[in-house]
Image 1: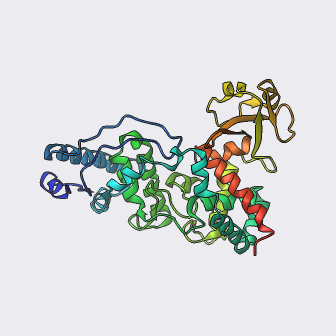
Image 2 (image 1 turned 120 degrees about the vertical axis):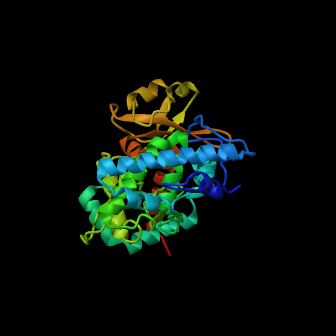
Image 3 (image 1 turned 90 degrees about the vertical axis):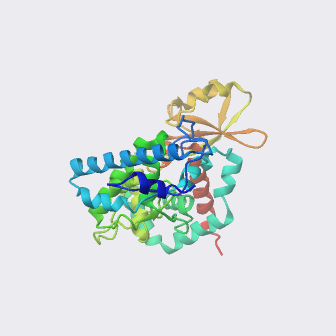
Length: 361
């Protein structure tokens, strides 16, 4: 049931946010960071008009509080923000999407999404078409082209799938109608309005993912404000269309998260028994020394100094586990997306692109 008419009846003044349909019960998981379940207030499928009114009032109150915060903290015009949010829609399809992140899949299924011939060939083509910017950025930052390209390939298939949701709709939906992550998305909505003001953009125009991630590298607004780069010095940080800016922005993100030039990313590990399972603690930050792997009856496939720190990772195959040692640079990739599945997909795609680059037809 569409509750726009309900809102019209009960909200006689101030902001009115359109809700496409009444909220339905959803299984909540976190998609921006590690997958996890959270308690969330839900409404039964036969939501009464009373519950519709309660939901609408709660959204109105939260939005009004946000507007007042922007006025006090950042000197926005209250009337202008009120008019802006009158055009914002709460999207039920976004609430459904964020409840089913790809990171909830086992590795053997997740991998098939991203390690494909089309994505590998597309990465080689992107490298060929943007070699000058990639080479320049690598010289400046030490971040290798294949890693930058793989990030863009995993995120948006080299700009082909940047998302069709209005960013302000996505962020408002998750800020005001998704309690498990409301604090995070309220902060991102704040950053979005600030970047629109700084970059002279109409807040109703930028589009992105269902979570509000933007452009070819899928930066959240806070990441845009902190890491987006103007490679060609045209006084614009265009991560939607300017591939040089995109390349420089991704590299800058990794540099600011302590990318180690020339260091390995991840190395296969082999076990002779199940003793290693005691070291699978879920930590993404390296916390084991290579020398300790031997005590777990593990054999690493590449020689490393015994004091090198790694994290032990297990990836689910159909009938077994695949073990890897993740180094500091693997951890850096997880700062882009806090899922080890994501980081491994980026790493393996980067290696496939690198390997095929010299053999591309």
